[in-house]
Image 1 (cartoon, rainbow, N blue to C red):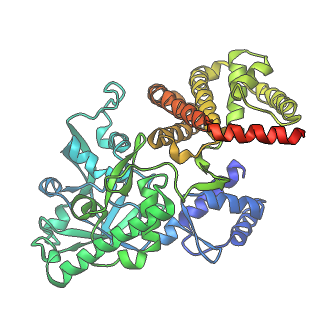
Image 2: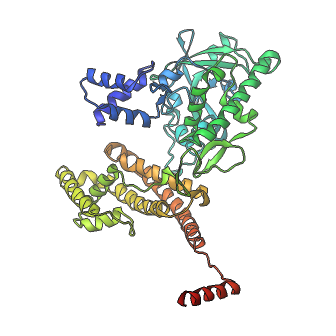
Image 3: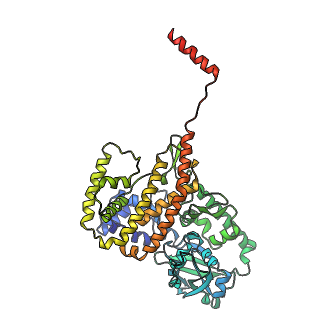
Length: 501
């Protein structure tokens, strides 16, 4: 699907709230003068994180699934004391996860609540963004306009002891609606695309919600949430993020979880979870079975190959977008050796099929001519160095992926956390390499990107030997020495003599 088409469909998916089919989407494209096949639309929808596939073959957007649904937030004592409620990740998964919380707008009785900045200690701030993953929380905190003077690069991405966070001003809620410490706000998204949320105050300050019928309903809500999460781990695995895990759970259990007596995910994790916790997943975090390592392979992502089980996330391939970057890097280097280019792209022991190598070489040469025609070396100097370093690491990573993919072993028997990190490195490098067309953004963030790549190189060096040793041990274990008993040797000699008579 072309870039212009993607922009049009992205707008459609951010605002359309009814169920629709692939046919409806093709018709929509036709109305705006864009010709797209049903197959292209089907592939795009299945890969789009903002769309849920329904059992009848139709689809619904995140906007359609979560607009109007109820969730709640209970301000902390620190927030109440300063009169500022920081949404952080507590609106997840009902809002656009790519929208920073400081950009969201809250309304009560049709009136917009003003924004206000509060100051919080680092640990409290990270807790407010924990559902993005602790590893990403500092980035979200640093992106708050209230921290515009915070130089994360000079601090090597460590937060200071105190940070500023933008939230909604609670003065109106306190003075006009009588909100007290311990009360919560009931929330409902009214405009998903714009990040507009309607709220009302729920009087829970004297723990009324924890007693009697109200208390029973609350406990039941946490039990239902935990049961739904455990079920989702078996069906979907750890997902690509905590947000995606929660989106699947709340979408499939909306009637059980989105009602006026609901609790919050934040309170569940901090006080009620017994079988679920935030666990480490490689260099990231996920919701998972409490106290258990998050595996890279399971029934949610494995495919049987004889007696092997292979994770689909570690299949060796070179996407077209990456090939373009290899060719551009070749031009940046001033190189014209296509055989050497092929050696950089494919592992040393890669086995080409019949005529495959010649076909790829011709394709690379044709692409080289097309790319060089519009190439400007001077405009590519900063991006070129980033591309060069990223591809060098990508080649090393993809070589290890190839070794694992081509090995006759069960990936469940390999070190799981190292496999997870390898998968994450593949994803991070792919995102870096496919974002290099945005030259302005790359030049603006070049130091951060280079620092991130240094971290990825360290992570790769840490896991490489561990995985290669595990592969070698599996290879050796397949060759067993069989010792023949003396009686068996004698019988063999008799059979040999008998065959000659």
